[in-house]
Image 1 (cartoon, protein in one colour):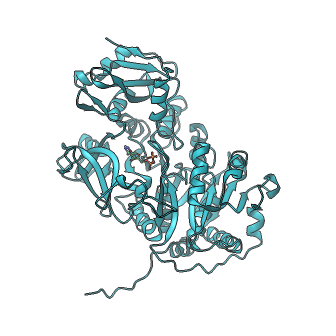
Image 2 (image 1 turned 90 degrees about the vertical axis):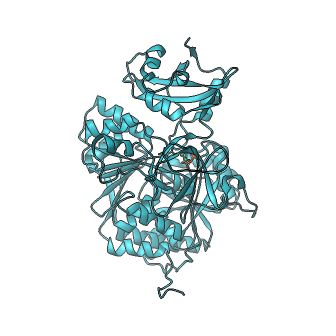
Image 3 (image 1 turned 45 degrees about the horizontal axis):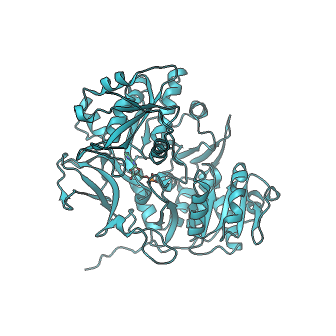
Length: 545
Ligand code: ADP
């Protein structure tokens, strides 16, 4: 029996129309260094129409890729709104990718137009001659003569383009399964892989971000989107904001702790989203220069494991709740969120909040143990996490129709490469990435557990742990420590600090002190680089007996 329901498409054009009318007065603001420039959603809708008209005149149609090379700002949000709504495909390029990778992903995605912030032109102009499919470059906040383009590429000024266009556009009803946007993984553990989101997946994902067991956006919120719009589908923030009417605050290029805190003091956002390294920097800055940040009701933090000591410090010293979430580019990215059950309070609630969280109804999850069987959700049995659902990718993008990285999928499930446990009440605790876990004498040592424990020491600002080859045990942990400003600590003392939490055989004997942990293009610990530094003998390793 079929339902009687209307078969309306979950198209992002509908979402744009909704935001521009129902939430017409909500705002998107960009920090300029000492103030904000602001537009309402009604104005964002008008600019999105102007941009769509301009892109259509350039010949951009269904399925064509329009890329961005931009900071988080109003114009980037306008592109997010306009491009999928007109039936084209948004591809936000990661401005911090290594040159080879950047050129690879833009050519692989066959980007036809790139919209670039003028402040990023010096960087972008180095790549442009190698971008084989790009026909148009649109410069935001700068004039077209600022760029010498290769033959066959036209350069436009964003402002002049939009000024010449009407502020209405007949956005089509797009098949909800059609491509809306694409994003490449940041390549933390390998080459970037392309994921293509649909209108339907982005719509359903936005509903989950807005849900109270997601991030719970409302029109009373002002969301500081520190996570770059090019990282993992911007964590779903743009479309969730349009759906809920949440106001957005865009930090532009002001991403260091000091300017972030200045903009917080000026705008007093209620919500913020960033990876743990950003929050670590903010915390250190607050220790030097105290500031009231209790206007933040919640900061969502994910992309890498959050040290419990960081969560406690934010809550106990600053009255701010860090909400731990897990996800991947491949999962749109919201995969799980660590809200404690309503009935748990005090220390019990913390034990839930430290985990990677519960899966929402739209995400199914299972663990595959070493034996290849599904492991029970008993909070003890470990396995590789596999997920499936309407906003989880079922394959990687291939322009040629072949099936890249087929081994990342398993009977219709996405293999995440993350290893952990799931409790009977559905909370995921990740032990490690399978590539990062340290295999010592046939047993596993979690690099994340060691990092979380070491960073809780007051002399430590950052700690990253990698496995290094060992003739007897196969691998042993090497702890790379960044000391806090002005602090000193001996490895003996740091190892001693760990004894209460770890078995003797897990305690690391190899330590090194470094000035900074190398970071990936999205601010995660770059363990590939740390391993290379070790292999090249660049780390001064101290061995404890
Ligand atoms: P990349 O794989 O290139 O880093 P992503 O940003 O998509 O690109 O990374 C997804 C991965 O980040 C996950 O598979 C997981 O290993 C890690 N991750 C994300 N959130 C968390 C978290 N809360 N705790 C631990 N690891 C996380």
